[in-house]
Length: 308
Ligand code: NAP
Image 1 (cartoon, helix red, strand yellow):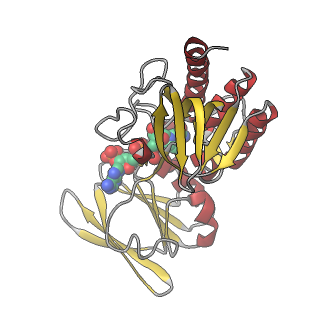
Image 2 (spheres, rainbow, N blue to C red; image 1 turned 180 degrees about the vertical axis):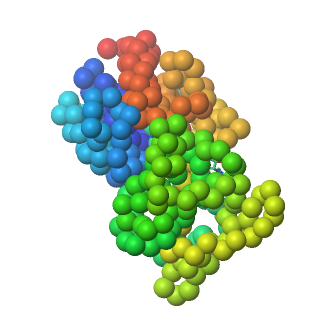
């Protein structure tokens, strides 16, 4: 019997694990992929406190993992498909049939990149279509590429891609960016970045070698333009990984999990932290704050509901 099972190994989950392990709670973190979550696909992070020059996403993830496991957090790989209850004991059910019991659960399973759902997106995935500049950017040395979106991810990763590409088109559906002002200033002053305003991608075209062009439509004029590009990087936000929670705890209209201020969900003894939670901010700094709050709340829940 575990005291706490943490589902998801991004900054929220790893911070929760650090706190619960230091509280001497028997803690298991279950992660389906690489520990670190979306941090590991972020090339460079400049707004996480404590790193005045910035820090590589992979380094930050590794440091968080090492710090948590040093205090006893156990990490295992697996995909959670369901949570069920036996009185106030939670049973976490994995895809491989394992069932692991725990007094409390902290959900921190983050999200996955949203898809454009246009022709060519699936066909050319891995052949020019990518959702990860850190992973695939280096394949585009001297090439022209398009980045879709106008948020922090699109602009930040677009700037990173100028290291390799000759031209980076940022295709955005409105006429002003959503990204942080400091990122906007950098994009506007970078000669390799060309903003394509008021435009939405219509179709990704290519041949047996991969992507050759992106057809975009101006939403104000209806005009269609073909951008000759070898890569299309899609950063239009993400959707929460909450499918496995259907019927377990209340979700909002966009499938984010609803919590109270102590990060308790509608299911007793189940807490949630990080990007899967219904809230405005999705930052590493806020995810680690969530992880700490959820861990302390889980500890209190165990003290109140289970005899020593
Ligand atoms: P986001 O902030 O939700 O931005 C998504 C962008 O894609 C928006 O500009 C949106 O346009 C556009 N978009 C959405 N659906 C579209 C569609 N179907 N077709 C074309 N364009 C579409 O997502 P994000 O940039 O991935 O960021 C997610 C969260 O992580 C945010 O809270 C962000 O602040 C945070 N984040 C922070 C940092 C950082 O602090 N440096 C870095 C990365 C991410 P509209 O603007 O018109 O809605």
